[in-house]
Amino acid sequence: MKHPVGWIAAALLGAGIIALSLPVAARAQNGQAGLHFMVGIPQGDFADNVDNPGFGLSGHIGYAPQANPYFVGVEVGYMIYGDNTRTVPFSSTIPDVIVDVNTTNNILTAHALLRLQSNVGTLRPYAEGAFGLNYLFTRTTIQNRGFLNAEVASTTNQDDAALSYGGGGGVMLRVHESTKLGRTKEVLIDLRLRYLAGGEAEYLNEGSIRQENGRIVYDVRRSKTDLFTIQVGAIFRF
Image 1: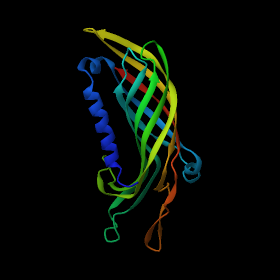
Image 2: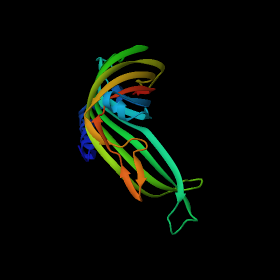
Image 3: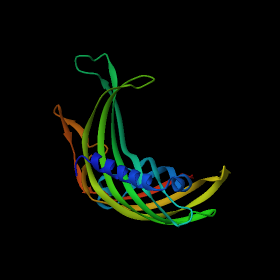
Image 4: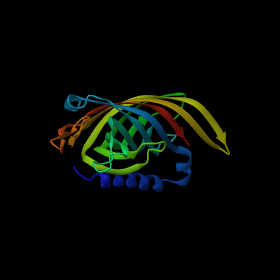
């Protein structure tokens, strides 16, 4: 599945329309957003091709009414599962200018979430389902060597996307609560485990780009893109 940007935009737009259709008072008092550190561990055939776990961040936003035990929203995540930097001359005709060539293997995830969760109390366990996509892309950049590492040029070597769905669960622990002008706000610590079954996609692994006889060769892999993710972060209710 190529060019998934439209899918991602459509999902986020749909979530925005749902949120805007809610009563203003409900949105103000029953919103939920979170920011998490995320680890993605390849599973099955994906693990046979990718040795490294992915590390990154995720964020979600949605509607979680205090009077009802559910949450509906969207989540976007980004992880790097491969990173390689080499130092080379800028070109054969300008050998006295040295640059860094950095290649990263990345996964962008975007999912709609439906969760059964308690929206009151100190300890709040939950179970959830997710449906969306995984976008895998490898990007190479040329960077100046220096304090700012400014980008000189870049290219996307390979990209593909696959549908993704699954479920998991977790627990939230409230660590702060405040009420001002009749509006309650909360901060919670969140631990979440999730298994995502991903469809087939083509991608590059760390070390999949090499030079042979002056040519660039891509060792493109193809498999399902199943992931087991661990997320730890903070949730804000407002």
